[in-house]
Image (cartoon, rainbow, N blue to C red; front, top):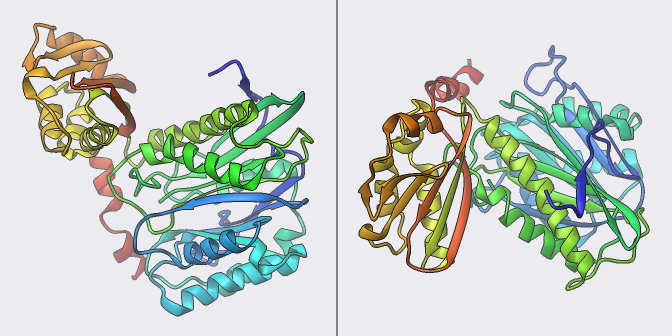
Length: 410
């Protein structure tokens, strides 16, 4: 981590002027006491930025929130877990609008200042009456200390809440950035089902925040993969309310560079937490491609290896099968020369010039049996590089995902 900012070790709190909270409203089961409805609210006006799934099938809350982010500065968001409100037609869009309207009324904001997010099963109508019944009481009980509670409320198949906070100094003023995220399955580069909500007290120009957010997402959430599937609901948003009172951060300044580094760290930390917490995951694997002829070539090859089911299965078994890595490199779509390719496991050379080395297999096994390791690929064709963070593929993943929809309809 750069010396220019530090992670905050104490309990993660929302930055100044942000309050949050969560309640149980029984989205999946009216009798459940599981937290499944949350709100994040800035008490002061904000500038805001967001990125959304590039899947052409988009959930109703995504479509609504995209409109709100284009037309206004979002000052609060409401989110439910347990139901994605995706592929639910006109009813789904009306339900998302009702969530925005109820939240705006409870917080004294305009409807267009509310982002709406949902996560959970696709194709099942949202029990919106239960959600709407929970919003007024929740809105009246928001608190800065409830950031971790909100992190738990957005979980679906996640085993652990995902949070991180950093502090940096900009123009002599301490600036805080805090983020939470959820995601364990349907995770793939290109707005890696994931949600991430990030709050900062920085004073920052809107266009600068939008540009930095896009850059940080590209360096983090767009570089992870658990199962190669892209969700209908992916959303990452950043709200900045200016209470740090720093000099305004503008494009091209040293302050913008520092803020970008800090925001990227927050997003990348959350992204790695998602991979580690993936459904059935036992390993976090960094795929590092260098020596590519172009950025596009490096990206294609890194993602091909990261998404290969055969490669991921071998990692699950602790097998350093470099041949599977090589075959994924070959079909990845980037320019290669087989006789130039080197492959490494945590620096141990497995393949040199496209051929096996004399590195003992037992030494490579020790690497692949670790909970995290790096697969390095050198193409020796240029100066471009690209990194993706991925996982293994286990029997537990298959067992978890076999019957979700069938069980829901029983």
